[in-house]
Amino acid sequence: RYQPLQSAREIRLLQLLSTEDKTSPVQCRWHTVTLQAREHQYEALSYCWGSSHETQKVYTDTGFVRVNKNLHTALRDLRNTGSERFLWADAICINQADIQERNHQVSLMKSIYSSAARVIVWLGEA
Image: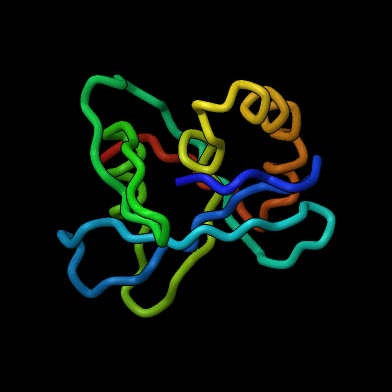
């Protein structure tokens, strides 16, 4: 599911695909970018991780990733109907199974959030 990052300043972004039907599965594409290059403007998502017992699938161009219900709901509700958006969310953009990558990416979080065009704080469903 995850391709290894090639340099110390690379991060993964999700290209959240648009949909007319908010009930359709959440679909994304991966993009690997360098923080300094600013290849894509992106939004960083801050949210409560919640329970890891209840997960949902997010479909990517390399398969699917299971995420907690809170992140899935945020991604589902943040989809646009006419345009795609680029997002960074720690639980899915960092390979959580790779301890070395996870530790390194956590050390970049200040730069990741400060380089974002906007930070979205997701408090949950209304």
